[in-house]
Length: 387
Image 1 (cartoon, rainbow, N blue to C red):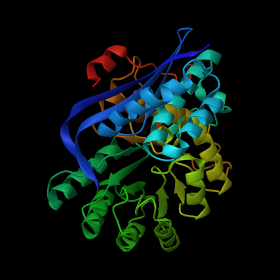
Image 2: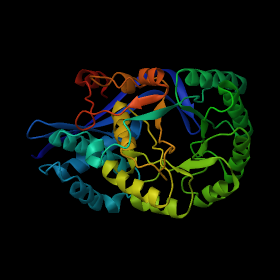
Image 3: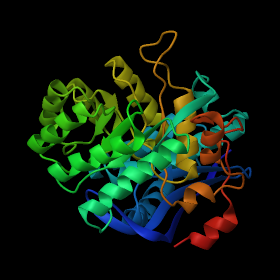
Image 4: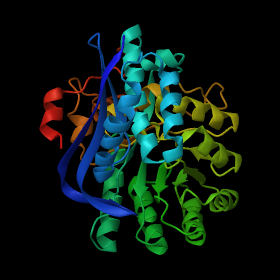
């Protein structure tokens, strides 16, 4: 079997309302799918992290740079292909968009491998430690409204996510350190005591501002404080981790085992959040997972994108060994964006129906068992929303 084409599908639509986080507002939802075809008629699907114009640029890398490197190769040679592409791109980018592009290609190769061998991806990795995973719902995005409107909306939205059955919830911050403490207090008020909540800063703080917010989160019993400072600021991460009770989480902006090596050796994180659609795909994710567990750092994957990204992460979470293990280990959770997302809800021929599963099961979603990713995109849907 040989690879005959590598194609990108960049999809986009206008959101019903503008959404924001600490770095920007956005009015369009986009996603970047990769389709690899073979001479025997099998097709694999993957996804590249990166929205909007980043996805458009990554399409050029996937089709114009990576595709010529791998045409005619055996799709089962995932490790060989990964190193071949990485070595040729090493002089031009060991992080960022080249790795995002390689990630989508690699995931599609794993989907193909599952279809060739008639096995779901978690079986190819080594088997499932669990057949379902708990799901946390994130929302509480920033909007162009005043603080009081944010406070009312965050309290109400947090309560709605809890009532929908999710195992935990996560909020955004970024209005300013003092204002963000008020937002966190509103979320705790909405969900009540004892229900886990997390705070995602998207690296908007200095270390001193992050310390101010983090001390308030300690009092509110937050589960984790995500990307409190810039991903390059390892010293800031270490200072926060040593001073705060709240778990420090991060890593979605880190790439490959070599980048993760420094993050973990510097003892920056209580919880690691690798992004499989960015760091180098499943082939590289498995090395990062092993490295994190070598440093006794639990992993809770970062998940953002379409139903293809969700399905990919369900397999990875199924195959993730418990750390440290025991009769009642803390289970890894699936991150689920509760905001409007057609690429999550309507992309597949047979939807995952995560929200319905969560509501019916007490916060859990099942792992797909069909070959490969276990999902198939709807080509009519892709054609409708392709740029």
